[in-house]
Length: 438
Image 1 (tube, rainbow, N blue to C red):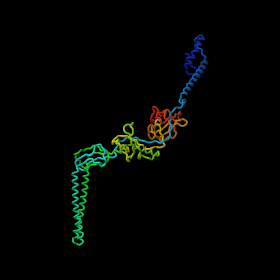
Image 2 (cartoon, helix red, strand yellow):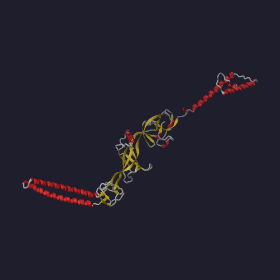
Image 3 (tube, rainbow, N blue to C red):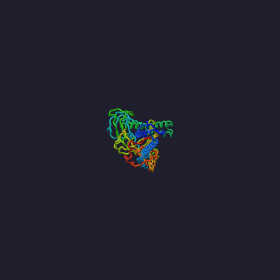
């Protein structure tokens, strides 16, 4: 076949084949016979023309690809916020429970029968107010006996005192022996000791008689009574007669991780805050997160000096006024502690902070010539929808908030300023929160 003829090793081309066939049939028509007359110079010229055409087409295609390449696209548009240092209040919200400031368990201190209950269950009582009356008759009799014994011993002591005074004068004139005088002096001392013992017995009897009146040791609200009139009670029994609870003020005990407490102290000390955690203001939240906070402001009292070995946490205690007795012991609450203000820190939107596999954080910063670069930052803690950053950025830095997934180190971008105070401006669909770098 004519179409398979190749000239000087040229690569087969279907277009050239078709052109050769056309020339063959033309020559056949002109000569009138089947012999193929072929001008090889014409074939060579035809091949050169075809090669030039294909080369030009290839250049056009490469130019079109070049125009669609990344180098040919305009700079990527990203949203940025400009950072400025500010003073930030550091707060922590911790779970806890309310605890009564004072709790008194009322128990009898003498044996006897309960004659009266002198309070209303659930009412407010005052310190020293009588709650129960135990039968006082046996203790009144014991007191009377002690008083009679005192009278007897005092009479004996007076007789011995008079006799000793008489013997003192007689021994000087040698009317009585020295031994007789010494004996009467010793008897006087014994009788005076008996008087002192009788007086102590009276005091003991009076105390026991007073204990028949069971009084409230503190002011507060009294609970239910565990005994009624006619019940037999004994001194120092394990059963509690009633419990008095002081509700104003009231304590709130919360627990915090020792590691988090250590980081908080570092942040506060690093920012120049010297207030520490003593007397820090505390806001109390009751119920769900949408509930209004408790009306009274509390303050942090102290933190335990020891760390719980089993949980690794530290106990903190706050005090709250409770004038209307709204807070009751055992109530589950959340305490928001304001540790103080940290100056000269930056609040960076969480969308801008990216985490590397090793846990370190960085942001994409846009330079004045509109190129992006990574800046490693120290993100201390999340506050709302932002990270508190203490190191790694400076005042005036522009960090990428929108389009962080589109940039690369050294890439040219078109930075569009956003309002960091408007959450809608810095929201990045599908890329919220701190990201994990791959």
